[in-house]
Length: 329
Ligand SMILES: Nc1ncnc2c1ncn2[C@@H]1O[C@H](COP(=O)(O)OP(=O)(O)OP(=O)(O)O)[C@@H](O)[C@H]1O
Ligand SMILES: O=C(O)C[C@@H](O)[C@H](O)C(=O)CO
Image (cartoon, rainbow, N blue to C red; front, side, top):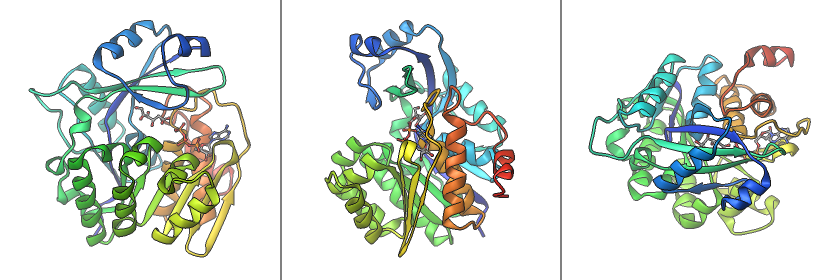
């Protein structure tokens, strides 16, 4: 019997978001539109430059779990925080919205809670500067089988694939979920991470996962090609369900012989932070509740469309009302 509709494993990260222009990015060596890892000193320096900062719980898969929970699904999140001010803030924010936050904050002897300095430029693009503290040290010991085997949908965060212990934990979690009658999938997270671990990514997808979600660059990175269509076809050969988000061009979903392209109304985002994460929340809601592929895509687009219209990576409005307005529920 599955107890959770969605269980996520990912980096537990506190996001600090502020506005900046392109000159600021250039002057401060920030690469636009991607995630860069930074050291603690640089995190403190960047933090000090932020004028209008907003602090919010973030982390990619954690954002997805929060979005799925807001839609009423029974959810759990597995990720590590330290028992410091940010860690307590983070854990409380998750439990306050009804998510089972599986691991208690770690008391001592390790790095502080992870944080990400996010700069949003006038075009809505977000540039992430992540200081990975304690969250990146996730191992199998943090991933209780009593939780993973009860997941209907397990959702893994590609960023955690950078460490061998994370890879092992992912394989075990995926297998436990599958053995319990559930299905495991991954958010690819980052083309650079794929480049560092391509063979292991492909092996995990082929052997242990039922679905994979990535943006165009991430899906292409799996196959070292510039051809998105070719990469999609190859991914579909090794994975039953492939979802490729395409920013203002919507999303493509492929399940065996079935393919659906779901467009969106293209807008200039207020803040693109969390677009992919909230797409995944809507998509997983559709999947967990047995919707057809097109409806899953439409639900994902609605969730992503909401999050890009405000600052911050998690929903701020009643998404179910948006689904109702579109006749989806
Ligand atoms: N400019 C836009 N206009 C309308 N919808 C958008 C736009 N950008 C993104 N979206 C929505 O967000 C979804 C995910 O966007 P995208 O493919 O950029 O994912 P991503 O790269 O993972 O995003 P991020 O890393 O910013 O969270 C799209 O499928 C779409 O539904
Ligand atoms: O990718 C994004 O747009 C942001 C999120 O994935 C998230 O908030 C994050 O990982 C930074 O903590």
